Structures are given as structure tokens and as C-alpha cells.
Length: 256
Image (cartoon, rainbow, N blue to C red):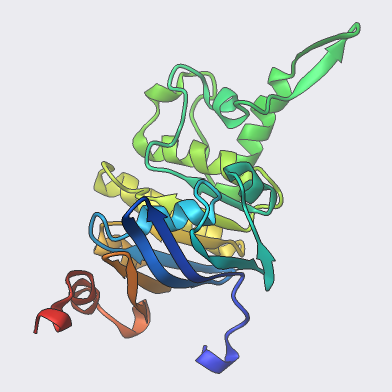
């Protein structure tokens, strides 16, 4: 697809600057994310990756700059605001309650209920069936047991439960994934990358933060490189390589 034939970006971030007191974490950053693509954000620690996605997901508000969704300017005062507009995130910690089973984690804070003789009780049967359905229909994942505590699942299965919780919202359009393969073995990493490809094929804009350039080049369409709070380049993975991206990360041209 040529630059001229590209559709309009689903998400546009323009001139994003974020200051914490006297420290500038982000300076005039632009970012585009398209439906049905995986955009990777890479950079060393302190490059501004996490701050940028926390602004996109409403956790932080920018000091300067604007966010556009489908061309409409949006302002998020909280993470809940972003979720309402179809933007959510799965962070590295996954935010799962290990002692609860997958359905309880899937609906944690949004439990389904039913009324029995005028008394409201948890609808455990429906939460279980919905968890099973979303895991299979959206992610192609089947768990051996939905009754076991989540802590007994493998790293990749836990990742699937966290993703399923995010995609359960029908209006989800943008999913940020923060280091989804960290601490996973090769097989689990491969499964997680397959989940990312599945979400992309369903038309979501997937924004992937990763320190693994191998993973980035396997699954992403474009790479947005952050360095010292600024975007120092965006490349198409098909037209680039790990050496070029690594050079942008460390500022090889600047050093030369």
C-alpha cells in the first residue's frame, strides 16, 4: 500500500508534550495508528514510551498537544474515558487476581448478575459461558479448565485472559499491549504473537510496546522509535531491519 493510498489514521496524536515539574518526559511527539495494523513503539528506558501510551489511554493528560480519533478531537480525563471511546490497554502486570478463576477475572468489577426471587446474585453460569465464547471466538483459545485459579495458568494463557477482558467490550478499536512477551518462553511468545495477529486481522489497531526487536519485526507493520522523549523516526518493517531501528534507538547517526 502506497503512502497516498493509506486510509486515514484511526488515531492521531499531534504535538504531544508532557512535563512532570521541571522534567520533560515527552516533547512534541506525533503518532498515527491505523485500523487493522500493528504499530510497535520502541526505545530505551526513559524514552517516553510508557508516558505516551498512558496519555493515549487517559491515565495521564498531555501538557500540550491533541489526540484525534477518527478525525475528531478527544480529551480523556481518565482511563475510563478512553475505554468508553474504544481505547484500552493490557499492561505488563496484566492486573489479574491470581486467586480468582478466569471468568471472575474477565468480569472483575463488571460482574454479570441475575435476579432470583427479587434477590440479585452473580450469574456465574453466564460469566463462564461468555468467557469461553470470547476466548474462542476472538482469540481462538480454549482453556483446559475455567475453574482453576488464574495463577495456575501458563504465562500465555494468563495473557489471553487479560486480552479477552479488554476485547469483551464490543466498542474496542485500539488495544495497547505493554511488553506482552516479557518473561515468556519461546512457545508462549509465539502463541502471544499469534494472538496479536488475530486481533489485527479483526480490524483492531494494535499498539505494541516491546524491547524485543525480533518480536517487533515478526508481528508489526510499522515501528515508531522514541529517544529521549522524542519520536526520532517511523519505519515500515517491510522496508527496514533491526539494525536500522537499533541505530535510531541509540542515536547512531547522531553519534557519527
